[in-house]
Length: 358
Image: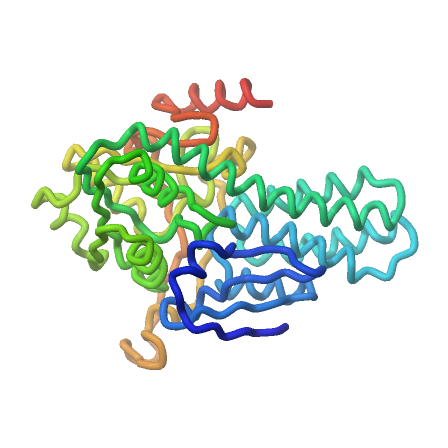
């Protein structure tokens, strides 16, 4: 693994991708170093990519889906197999290692499955390796196109002078570029509307303060940061009139799995009559799993018991630290996709969406 430190410049944020393939290597922005430092890491081993996903060097459902695909491309290059059967076996092992890093975000499983389909359709070792790399790079390019299309559809839901709340980071840093929820906000501004944004801090990893506020501030948005505990205050006092968030998984019934705290934001929005929207590509939908069967990733307690090197809780305290929660469909006003905006009842509208786009 190589690490490059580059002095921060807003130019880099605007033109560089969160994750990309270059010279048979995977290059990522190390998001654990933001907002203080802009660092790039280069990986040539899929095990390092797996660790990067697990340790949040790269995060956000679309971004880790592409990262997983790039990881399999590295695994193909690393394999010394001389037959198709042995190469596929090596890729299956790599796929399992990559999948186990973040079990809740369905884009990771989707990205891995797409690459495995390409690999299994190949006729020779060299052909498989070439096709896998091409497919992974194409997936990254399409992610940007999808986000921009989704942004245009979503921008129609927002009005001039809206104050939009968002939770966690569903921006350029959560995708290859542009973003899902923040892509909608970007597209709204690009359409000529004046909007302000309120970003939640998003404890315990602080994706809202470290990443969302970072992105929006340097893209010239009027953005305010609030602690997670001020969501109700902001809504009660008329500081918010719409909400848009991303998603890590959406099941066929319209239940949305997203960063912990999303359910609370949606509940408060419902209480105050504020529209609550979710922005996610079709690759985030899971049409097979029931909501009650989705595995919620539990993360280490030290994320909660301290901030940086400073302890904020007593030794030995028990910690419950889920990475995600589930927002039920009755709290959601609409789901923004690259194929349009779907509305309740979601079981019917999601079914129609996928029937029309098979």
